[in-house]
Image 1 (cartoon, rainbow, N blue to C red):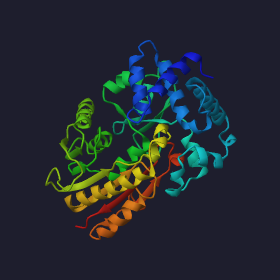
Image 2 (spheres, rainbow, N blue to C red):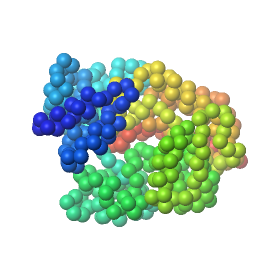
Image 3 (cartoon, rainbow, N blue to C red):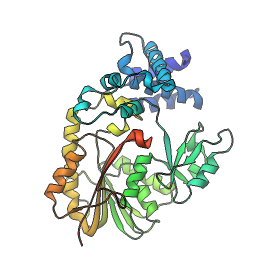
Image 4 (tube, one colour):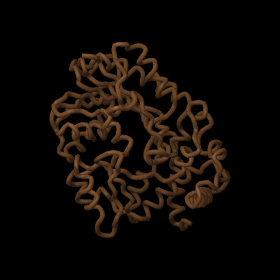
Length: 376
């Protein structure tokens, strides 16, 4: 069980969570100000807060914050010991909002995966995953970093040290990036010397991967509607010593940021994030069916706007970290119907033109990826 001090800190975080302050942001704000807490204590506070949102529908709503956290943690420990101790029917009714059943299948193992603590994935620089694992498997943390067979540069990390303080991080040797996101970059498969566009680049996680895969050669355009996110992207790229990119603001409208024609375009679109609900359980209770419908319309609009920017032979990749029908096949189908000039293309070599990555199969976020190619 958690001690009373950790419960008190976690309860203060919960009290600050609101419509304008999600749990992850509330945690960052609180822990930044909690100067007396050590790294281990901060991790326990974070785990307690996220456990609460995974098990929120089981706790007594009239109990104190500390008592609710205590109840949620007891359920977490029970489930960790025996994941079958809670029936799949109960998980379907309580672990996710009721509207989700109309939007996607809810396999029992998917629901169980949502209730587990997430795995932390790192992306090493190309060809250095084994070297990074050796560097991290020293000191107080031993045998905590292991390369993955699903992606050549992915490393699973289970240690406790603050990775942002490690020499490897400051040397730009890795990025913290979920395995599913790394598979999006591999699906793009950009080649050195090509010109690519990351249309919804955000803070640059996938752009950095594309630039790395291109060997710092060629150009990746990075656009986003947020100047703040693009500034963070620039800082990350400088640390990684990647310079083959350009940035521009773009609000997703028909007025494009450039007349450039591209060898490849990645639309990693804003979405409901259902595939991230293991990592971000608070989002389960703040996302609505109406959000899904609005986001699906925006996703289709983004694809429609960028399609004309492909070169002959160019490749368009659509990805969303969600699994709802409206945002996956509900976007890919009408886009394909309206663009008979684009041919569905294998997401991964020799595979299907649409791929669904399930969290329980990947031990990572859920993701949907579709690809098309413009004939030469």
